[in-house]
Length: 292
Image 1 (tube, rainbow, N blue to C red):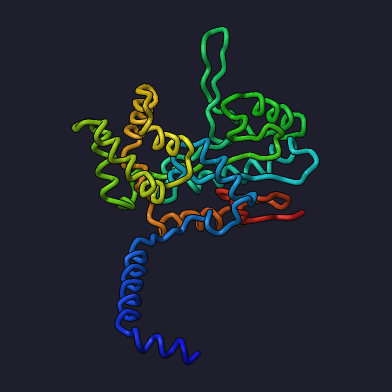
Image 2: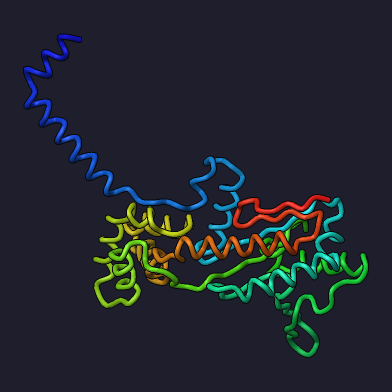
C-alpha cells in the first residue's frame, strides 16, 4: 500500500493529467447518452412481449403510429366466445370510445370493418357485422366467415379464432422530431431537391444514429439502411425510394407523455368494458385479465 501511495505522490502531475483526460472522455460520452422510454427496454430479449412487438413491427410500417389491442379467451369454444352478443357489444363500445380520443386517427376492428363481396350484380361493399348474432349458430357462422376472409385473417382475427384485434392508428407527425438534423436530411431525400446519392451516402454514415432514434423496429427500414452502401444499383435505388417515401416520419414521434396518456385511457376503457372471461393485451403488454 505504501508503495502505491509513494508512486502516486512521486508522479502526481501525471496521475492528475490521466484523471483529467479520463473525466473529459467520460463526460463527452455521457453527452451522447439518449433516453429510451420504449417498452422493449422493460423486457428480456427473448420474452414473449418482445416477440409480439417484433412481429407487429414487421407487419406495420411505423409502430409509433399504431397501437395494437389483442383480446383472447380461454373458452374451449372460441367461436361462440369471440362472437358472443355480450362481447361484440362491449367491443363496439370500446371502438366507438377510442375513435373519440385525442390523437387517434382511425380504428380498425371486426365491429367496424368493411366487407367486400363479389355478387352477380358486381361488387357489394358493406359492414362485416350488420347485426350482432343472437344465437350460437349465427356466432359460429360469422366466426368462420371472418377467418376465411383474407383481409381479416392474421390481422383482425387469428387463424384459430382465439384472438381478435383492434388496431388504433395515431395521427401522423405529432410532436417534434427526435433528431432535427436527421429529420431535415430525410425530408430533403423525400423532396428530391438535392442529389439523392449524396444524401443516401450521408444517411448511411449516420445509420446507427438513425436506428437509435427511429420509432419501432421495422426490419424493412433496417435492411434499407444497409443497402444504401450496396454496389447493386437496383438494391440501392430501392432502398433510397423506401426511405424517401417515409421521410422524417421515421424520426418523428408522438410525445412520450401524450402516447402514454392515450394508452392509459385505452387501458381504463378496456378494464371498464371487457366482460369476464377475456384477456387483453396492448402492443404486447398484458394490461387486463378478466377471469370467469
